[in-house]
Length: 352
Length: 206
Ligand SMILES: [Zn+2]
Image (tube, rainbow over all chains, first blue to last red; front, side, top):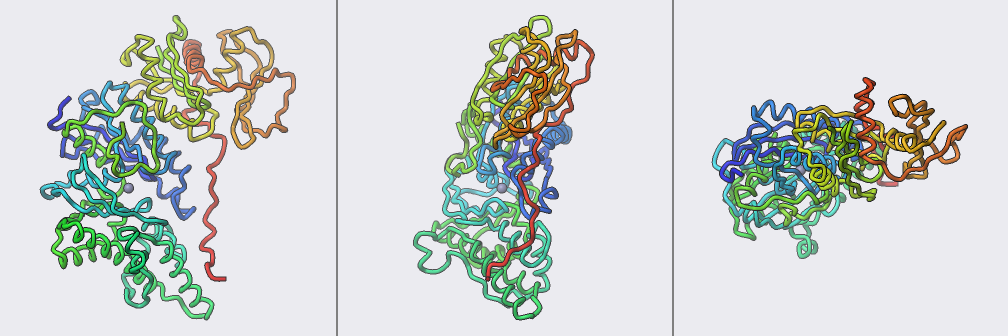
């Protein structure tokens, strides 16, 4: 096997994006994504069974277009990589079954890797500069997860500092959008509505930020209370027969989310004396979160990295990149016996 | 030669040939661990058969009916394997494998194949006979039915708790040899996803 610049095909099906990525070492050859987001719109959130069905339908066409785009021969692949967790169990299983079969058909080794660590690995494929150095703090925020990681080494040493104890940040955006009568997905809708609003109009709570929370939950997040606070505030206005200032609510809510995310991320950089912060996950599409990240990182003397959006949302290229890194690091492939693990811890960078 | 995979009840993988019959078959009765076992079963069936992937002319997928989480895994594996070896996927209705076995071992007359659909329901398919090629003739189903709603008629009822990928593969071989059409390349979930459209936001204050 080529351990210098391995040609790897990655399969990602942990949530609602069917991602097939192909990389050669650190070079991106294809990042093919098929999303079932529109099918979830009328349900106001990702429906696991709908997502899993969509993965099965999208898998074949996505494989074909990724290989076409990368202009490779399947026989030239050095390995297949796949997300084995964390994520939606039924959705993950589609990718796991497919990856095992593809590796067998091609007689190639299989690397079953961690989705969250994959988000960190996405940065390697960003061709706008040198990859980030380690250690780094990574803040991964999407509709499925909100996690703060300390990455000492991408392939061998990743620690979970904190994560959401209830809703993911992306879910909070969807729920608040619904409260305000805005369609799914909520992130872009809130962003648009907030553009005209005053972020200081309403002081919504910052979850797990009180001194009493900081001992046990210094780096953890909670968005459930924030969502309820927004709902209460809106209902009070409605009950009083007053108009709801949607722009101000959206801006103030978004500010609360951005503030708590970045406050904790920068605190992690400071506490661990790591002057680097990497963002990942679909929520980095949010303009205010990016803006506040730039501002807070600059103030704290922390270098900030935000990969291009197509590499931040769930994708197969990041899985292929992490697989390639494991191969380059000399790690052995996974067996054919692993399963999908919806709660796979970040310390399990690859499953055996 | 064909590689056949079915995960509509347990998980089964086999290598078959029109002339040689079932060359090798591997099976797991576990109705939950499809994703864990599917790779090893395919590998072991291939190894035991001595057939290399390049020698296959297609990959048979059992399209169900079956509870969706498990059913999908075999179909995903069949499609990905077929993609890897650049060979077609051959879809077969999983119940046909059960009926094929029953008629092949001497059963005659009408047959009702019944499998567990969970949630106190069953999947049912009705067959009239085996035709000249030995293929079971399905006249109704597969359908989803509550136990009380199953009409027996003149049929012999056969409750099955296992689908043989070898038999599934032989149905595919005979179907191809007889020049008959294959099943649709669509999973037979026979149930809509469990979802209710969002009714909008519910109040948090009373
Ligand atoms: Zn993700």
